[in-house]
Length: 64
Image (tube, rainbow, N blue to C red; front, top):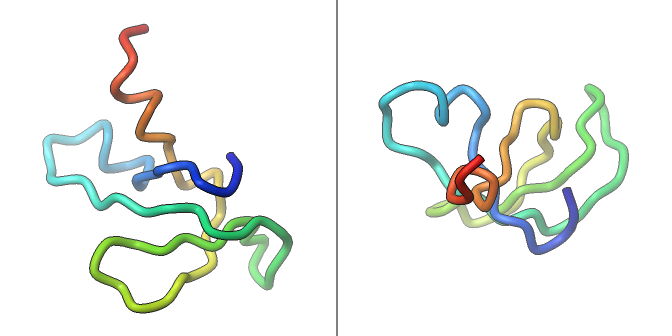
């Protein structure tokens, strides 16, 4: 994952629920093994997340 990628939570893509979508705005290392900062839709500031808990939106839209 890199800056500019659109992501959603990994668990949301496997269930029939509305997906939250976020934009990766920074990569690095933060407390709790977080390695990306994501600006989520409707949120005023970016939050740190573990990329292992996220899925790229473009992968969900592309047939396998």
